[in-house]
Length: 193
Image (cartoon, rainbow, N blue to C red; front, side, top):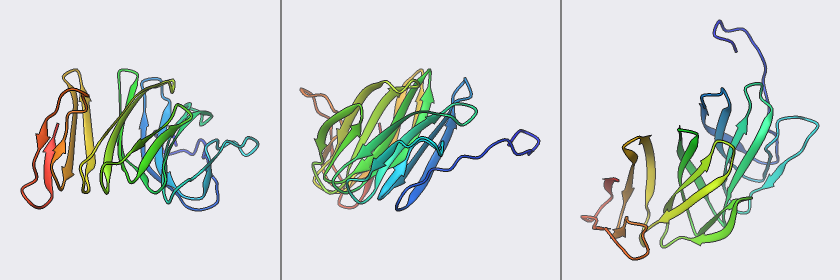
């Protein structure tokens, strides 16, 4: 719609199974970024004459898709794993996209980072970074022996701030030679980093 509520265009993302959008954001150029979850398969390209099919390898997989301001497909990222890989939130800041979620068992990002990351416990969390042209930069995973989740993030010139929960002792510092251990008091504790 335009700002006066007049219809401009609509796009449909088809597939076998369920496709549930989670979030939508715009960048400074007016490009549209969509995140969501799906099972079965989904066609990332809403053009009915072009198919860009991604198949869920587990129960629920997630995606990040970029469309231009007229709704034409630009690129898509597929967050996949043996069971669930679920998106939580993403932020666009200075031509970069910061994307958080959680996963069970393992996860990969196709087509950029097909190497598999394995969960430490029941439910681990991840943060990934791309530029707005879809170039992959980073994938970091965290976790404890129990269930952990990221819920929200904010990005500014001061850094990246994330809130989440954990149920057991967790090393919240992803550095190979450093650690910052948080210890749960027994139930689910919250953190900000």
